Image 1 (cartoon, rainbow, N blue to C red):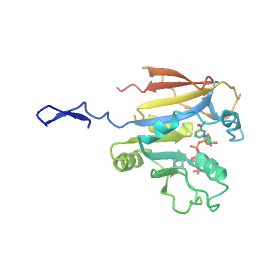
Image 2: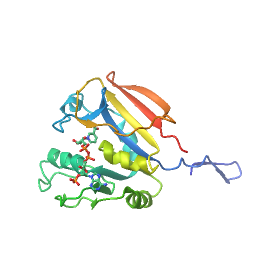
Image 3: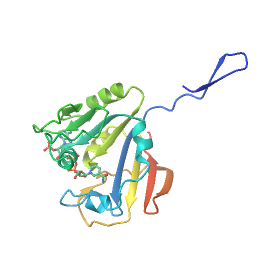
Length: 199
Ligand SMILES: NC(=O)c1ccc[n+]([C@@H]2O[C@H](COP(=O)([O-])OP(=O)(O)OC[C@H]3O[C@@H](n4cnc5c(N)ncnc54)[C@H](OP(=O)(O)O)[C@@H]3O)[C@@H](O)[C@H]2O)c1
């Protein structure tokens, strides 16, 4: 809660904090793929980082991803045992039906099946901060299927891939997503923020 001190020294109530959101924040090619058919992100990494990430991650209290995304992160660290620090300070839930290696010291919980009880735990542990669904698209779709996604924040890269891992393989058409903003980033991308309509 924000507030200001009134002349008499009393704290006036400020506007209430915005409610936490479950957000799908990702980058996509113009033709709707978040990784190429070989699970590579070279097409994205050629541009370097955009500067919106620090503001986004500051408000995140819990992270979820599927196993292909987790394995990509592990590979980028040089493997689970390479000694590279796990990139997220927040507790991270990894959806998998397999036994995957864990990064020593990282707060990673392996889960499978129904996303609803996991989302409940994530919201509780996020303690008022946002839940970040990293991807992939079908996992985010599973959260959408249960009305658990509030916002899509999609950074569109100026490339087409012709195939690969889909952004969000679900039909969300009626009612459509609600446009919140469209912002050019780094003279290269457009970041589009959509709200998922509620019944
Ligand atoms: N462009 C970007 O910013 C961005 C962001 C995120 C990811 N990526 C990339 O996009 C690709 C995404 O790959 P993907 O589409 O295959 O998605 P993914 O969600 O990363 O992985 C899919 C796998 O997760 C497991 N899984 C999903 N839901 C589950 C559930 N409810 N219970 C148990 N296991 C479940 C299954 O594998 P198992 O059960 O066999 O383990 C499934 O095959 C990756 O290459 C990743 O690196 C890109």
